[in-house]
Image 1 (cartoon, rainbow, N blue to C red):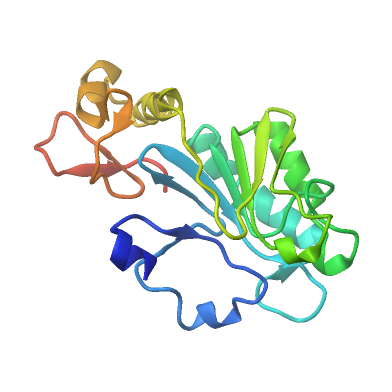
Image 2 (tube, rainbow, N blue to C red):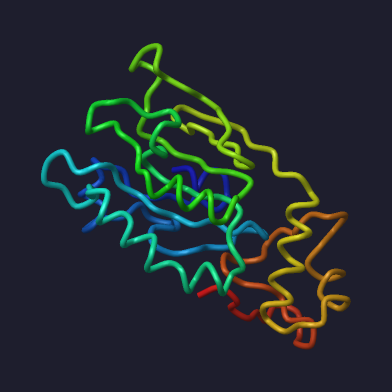
Length: 212
């Protein structure tokens, strides 16, 4: 529905109750789980799932989640980090609760320490849970946002511009020839597909992949 009605990219990670997505994933949406996707210049690393409190496709022990993070090290180096850590569960001690189903992951804190992205967006912690509900907080240099319900995040233009310079460098493209094509007053031109960057020495409409 969101993709059809908005015409925008919908990027998601799996929640602890999303076992059905294994067979029938949401059509038209982009799953960021265990990879980094680039959407209009933003690098988004996805790690879905919650603490394992019962059998489930998208539930993990702390050790299992730490292994998932470790497997992403090469992709993080290749993309020179990321801008948004998109998770289902929160980081331990930052908007989580003490009971196992709603505990956050310590390895998310370690990842934020190492990369220091501008944003982390998580779910899982609903407002109806009571006074422990936290909508926004900070972890070091990272703004941590509980996306349950809704949240409008305005991305600074300078962050989008900076990311496209980094993507150009990673793809060994001349930055001076890239910026006029992919930026319009600091914004990414609409229509660039996910994970792609326009190659300036090719005809319009041809793209290269820089993150996969």
